[in-house]
Length: 385
Ligand code: GLY
Image (cartoon, rainbow, N blue to C red; front, side, top):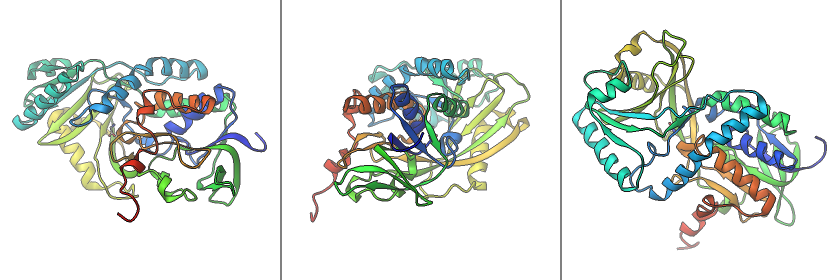
């Protein structure tokens, strides 16, 4: 692709790649600028699509968004496989939440009440019911809850397929890091500037740089979304077998600590995740890995015999209300698609479809229109107050 594109996407994570792919499929010319597409937080993620398990107190407004987002995944996964011939690991596997001690049990019961009030599909499980659903669980667990509709994808398979889908749809992948947004004399965004100093012109700029978004220069301070990095450590393990170790995602509450185990079809398991506010650093720390393994082996003692494949850490793009920023900003031609926090994969189809729709029509469709990308400005105190 030579010359100016219709759209340049700053950031090739799961959000940037999917928005680029669907936009290109609508006939829009798109460039994605990222030094290593798909190798940031999307590479670290567990790939859970968990509208019920991630629904927590005070987040009633988000639940409808999460449910709508989850409902789009079967068609999105099928479309991605059809476009590329590549698998996504999509499964409706359900989630079993388990409690280790009595206060963990009480917390799961409180969440069950809250989720029932919202009409979500979940039911209480005894300890033996948990153990019959998830072979290998410790007899010490105090029961839990079933969330049968929850789904998962293989995060790495999805981003590899998205890179292929983008390439086949004619998206130009530029292996550079974006340093700043270029804003013209008229105050409108007109491209991005790479760290190497190259201007990549475009009619519209989509900022989809996840936790890095606030570090991209050139954007007026008031327009920069209040996104912050929330570090998550993840451990990847391989069971002895080459088939899925257990059917369901397991979410554990272990003496007040949260963890999850996501079983993949190839017998590997993703164990996550810490949630740490430490700024922009992704060093893998021994203490965090120790804590995850220690908690997980209290739930599934057989873990001790599994192979340790990888320890890795990434940065979730947190937002003040845990909702994403998707849509236009006060800078003409500058669109945000960031702040997806713990739900980047869950919110991928709904975000990509909304960005493609915005580029075609100038409006963000429901339900994402209920979360305007500039809502933080309304919440901010007036200057000088
Ligand atoms: N959605 C799981 C996580 O952010 O760790």
